[in-house]
Structure formats: structure tokens, C-alpha cells
Image (cartoon, rainbow, N blue to C red; front, side, top):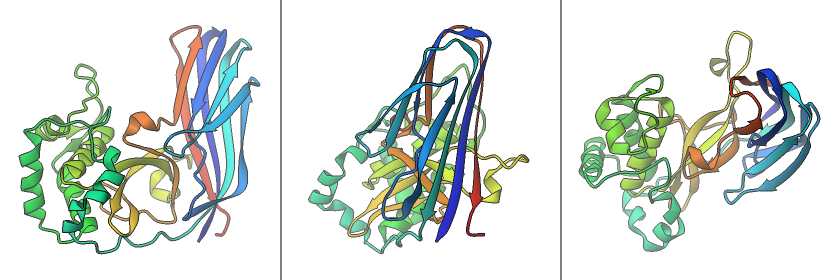
Length: 285
């Protein structure tokens, strides 16, 4: 069990005054079986704002702010204390369990195309060959091995401004290069084609490897798969390592379009600088 103090900050600066700004944030940790809100989170904005909160279709807490005071800098901070607990194991459901009609129907939206995860018919034999190559007998082992096969075939790098963000999993895999986000979406596409319901989770990672020299981290992402008879199982698609007490879930959805951590619109100059970061302290250390 871990007790974590989390402070997330977003700061946007403009070269001349912004007349009005609207901000939508998804950074509040979830309250569920493996993490508990110990001290309810609080938002602060400078300049002050009016806010409204709701829970979206996927169970993510969303907060919107409206700033009507002219400003050149807008800062939003969120503070919360969370207790995380060990997550249950993935179980050993056989791959054949994925063919159960009731299971597929219950998870249909995580087996289908979504805005950032699509594929063409030519991708199906590619996934079938990978499934045959990894040769796993249980669902969780197959999912992790398939994820590593996809990410291992990709060289990660910055986005190509000319080609934009790609959504077809087969195109991404065939190119041999991808951004982190494209690689994760390609993994989700491969898992869905293999019959494994998969969704994206965004959150905070409370370990020393995920922070910069100033001790600041940021929102990151991992994958959850539905395992027959066991529920959802989370793991890192680049390492295959199961999510643990250092993982703090904040949002989930079919892909990244369902759970952006921050969206901002404003009336004012287009030029701006946006800096976000999260500082996490282990209170039980």
C-alpha cells in the first residue's frame, strides 16, 4: 500500500493579453478497488475562474474552467492525496475463453475501431502471424507478448509534422517508426484484432525513472485488457510489466481521444507557451 501526495500544474503564457479562456481537465485520480482518494482533490486557478465538474461515460472525472478576466498567464493547479493498493493478478484464462459470445458482447466497444485505433483487412493476417509466433496459452501472456512484438518492431521518435498523427495500426507497424502515442494505439489495434478487449488508461507514475532533473513528471499512459473471469488487467505495453502501486489511474477510454488530460481554447494571440508537470511525494516513505 502506498500513500501519495500529488500536485499537478499547468501554466500557459501568452505574449499579449488573452481576453477569455476555457479549460477542460481530466487529471483527478479515480476512486476504485485499487486506489482511494484520501484527501479530496482541489483545483485552483490564477486568475480565478468559475468551474463545473461531471463524470463522463467512461467514469472519468472532468472539470471545466471559464476564465473571463484578461491575462497573459493562466495557471491551474490540482492537489490530492491518494492511497494505492496492490492490484489483483491477471489470472490464467485460456485464449479460447475469448471466443465466448457473452464476453465479446459485454466488451464490444473495446474490440471495435475507435477514432485513433483503426485497421484495414490486410492487418488481420499480420496479427494472426504474430499470435502464432508468440504462442501464448493464456490471455494475459498473449496480450503482453503481442504488445512487446508490436512495440519492439517500432523505432520511437518525435511526430512527423508532414504526415500528422496516424490512426491505422497496420500502417504504423509497417512503417517501422512511431511516436509513443502511435505505438500504444498500434498495440491496442493488434490486441483488438486478436480478440482481446483493450483500452487506454492515462495516469501518473510515481517512480524516480519518470521524473526530470527538477523532480517533475507528467501524465503518461498504459493499457488495460479485459480477461475472462478476472476483470481488467493493466500493464505497460513497452515492457509488459503489470501496473502496480506506483500507477495512479486518472482517465480511461477507447483511445487517447477519450481521455485528453488538458484541452484549452481562448480568445487572444495564437502564440503561447504551455508547461505542465506533476510532483508526487510518497507520504509513507
